Structure formats: structure tokens, C-alpha cells
Length: 514
View 1 (tube, rainbow, N blue to C red):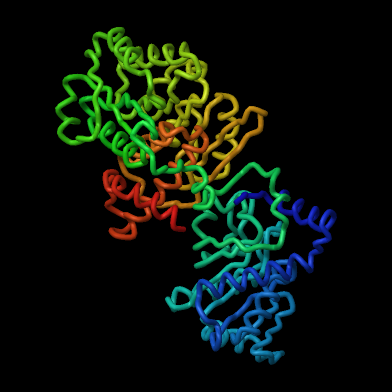
View 2 (cartoon, one colour; view 1 turned 90 degrees about the vertical axis):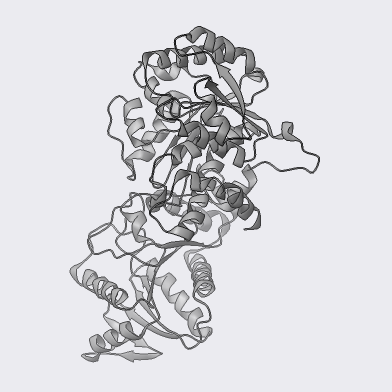
């Protein structure tokens, strides 16, 4: 499912008319019916239910009128408030003059659903005071009545479809039924918090019209195509091996979380490269792992040689979580990267660098030149700022999108920038930048160790032969899905990173059933 800017959406509509004869009335009819069908699917039977539609003067209002027509056909009791004319049509009866305000208030108080079809993506100016007042009254009623549902057609009035900025009069809705494609601004704050449940309706565009678009929303349909199949004749070698260089005495949990996540993601074998000092900790808690014993930190060259001698046959290598940032650790990381770059492509495991791997690299100039091709890096905003030499990186505004694309190209990596709506960017062999954005924002995941779980999942998918951009994408979506499963049981506070581990295979199972 592609994500579009305002300009891209307008260009799609223009091409639909020019190349396919799909005029604006035809698109509007398809859009309105699709939105009405999605609405009914979510709200249940509409016969006898009261609906109030707030109708604006443009195409968004036109979509709303089509929705109203279908709702009436299916037995709903529909009131239409034409904002520009200050005119109300209630259950087919036009209300005029002094009665309008009183009957509008009555319609607001009796409606089961209020639909916002006032303004769409074309809004260019601040909302007028009277439109803000109307929306404020709807919000007050929603606060008073939990049973009332407020639904936006295409987007909540007053939201900027490119940036996610909102007008002071914009109100949060329970559901947004957007048309054709999700809009870019939906994935950035504050707008992301106003949309409620997101559904995508059709306007009847031929699928090939979207083939040139290079930004996608992570969905079950997309991710289902990315995860590897599980043939009946499989053995553990079928699903590859991953090696983890993670953990240290102050941070022993990182290797356990990342390694367990790799195993839960379906990889055939997980090996933790650990010192003899750390072995008892992991051996007692992670029974399914195998272990590569490394010499002590003071014997760095021996450590690297031991790794080199045992890395053959591993398809992925995770470097960084919990390693610490001592000078000896940094030296070790540099030796490992030098060794990886020297390997032939077919013998080189795919590399993921996370957490302290990134923090150690950020202290170096031109650090990205040290990475082998096809590396995946997974910074959170703070780590991204350090990698960018002091740039302040947002956790949820539009600026992070362009920064992610720019740096994925400059650094030659698959770049996964964590945040409420995580971004993944990758440059293909033709030089085109591709971006995927996760919709499933979940504050429950804002806790220590969840990033180690995500990195381990990426390592697990890479070990199974999934390409870096796809492995990162699948891991982000399923990590968020696992978080949703935990939140559904315990709420949005108190999630521990280890709570995600048993939910990863369940999220994979759900994916096959959706």
C-alpha cells in the first residue's frame, strides 16, 4: 500500500482522468461507496441509526454526499449540514432560518456517528472561526458521550496531509477512512495522534498507476510476502545461522533478548559470541543457543581471530547491543568490520549494527566507509543524532523522513530510524530510494531492551535469506504486532522487552491468518 504526498495524489487523479477516462464524478462515486462500505463494516448494521454528515464545499464534501446516499439506501437516518450555506437537511426535510442551529444541535446530540467531510487535502488556509466552533462542539459531544463515534473522510479537517501539522481547530477522531492511499502526513506528529483507526477506501484507480511510487506503508499483506516459507522438508540448516556479538558485564540482558528474538523469528541456529566470564549467565537462561567462547577484551587480536575462524556458514551477524563503549571494544569492532569487508560476497554474513555498535562508530570520522555492503543500521533518534555529528533528530516529525532518505543514500546502508512510526530506507541498484513506514505506533514499546529484540529479529530474518530492506521491514511490523498483543493483555504501561519474545511467533501466525 503506497503512501502519497498531496502532489502525488493530485497527479494520480489527473492521470486517471487523462489516461483512463476516470473523471472526478466517477472517482467520487467509487470513493463514496467504498467509504460507506468500510464504515458499515466497522459500525455494524446502520438501519435506524442516526448519522450526521458535515459537508464542506469541495471534493471532500462531495465524497460525503455519496456516503450519505448509500447510508440512506441501507436504512440509516441521515442529516446533512452544509457548512458553506449553513443549511441543514434532516431525514430528507430541509430546515431553514432560525430553526437551523437548534436542529443542528439536536442532530449532534442524537447522532450515533458524525462524519467529518468538511475539508480534504486541498486545505491551504487556517480554519475559519465558525468551522472551528462547529468542530469544537462535535468534540465536546464526543467527550460527553462515549457511544458517539466521530469519523473523518480522507483526513480530519485542518490536518496537513504532507506534514502532519494540524490547525488549532482540528479535533481527534475515532476513525479515518482515507481514500486511494494513506497520506504522508498521517505518519508524523501531531497529526498521527488525531486519526484514530485508519481504513483505506478505493477510488477505483487501476493498480498499475501506483507502480512508480516508492514509499509504502507496512501492512500484513506486504509483510506476508517478505517472510520466508516453511517447507515440510525443512531442517534447521534451511533457516540459517546467526552470530551475535552482544552483551558485556554491565549489560548482560542485551544478548539474551536479541538472541531469543532471532530464534523466535524462525532462524535455525543462534550463536552467542561471549567471553568465558559471561558464559554461565547465558547458558543458564538461553538453553537453545550455542556459544562461541572469545578471549578476554585485553586479547583483541585473538578475539578477532577466534571469530574469523568460526564465522563460516553464518548468514547474519548482529553487532553492538550491550557491548559498551570502551577503547578496547571500539578497537575490536574496527577489526571485525575490516575482516568482514575482506570476505568475498558469498562468504560474508549480512551485518546489522545497533546500539553500542553505532555509538562506537559515531566517534569516528566517515564511519560509514568502514561498513561492508548491505549493512543494516538501526539507530533511535539519539543515536541518529550522534551518527549525524550532533544534529537533533525528531522522534516523530516530518524532518526525519528526508533525513532518513538522505543518509541511507549517503551512507550506503539500509537505514532503520526508530520512532513512534519507524522508517526504513534503502537505495536499490538503480539508485532509486525506497521507503517503508510503520503505522503501528505503541507507547508500550518505549522501554529498555525492545530495540535489542528488534535487532535480533532482523538478524533472524537475514539468517533465513531475507534481503536487508525486507528483513528490516518484516521485523519492524512483527515487532510492533507483538507489542500490540502484549498491550491488549496488560495495557500500555509495564511492558518488559522479554514479554515480546513469546508473542513473536504468534504475530507470525497471525500474519498468515489475516
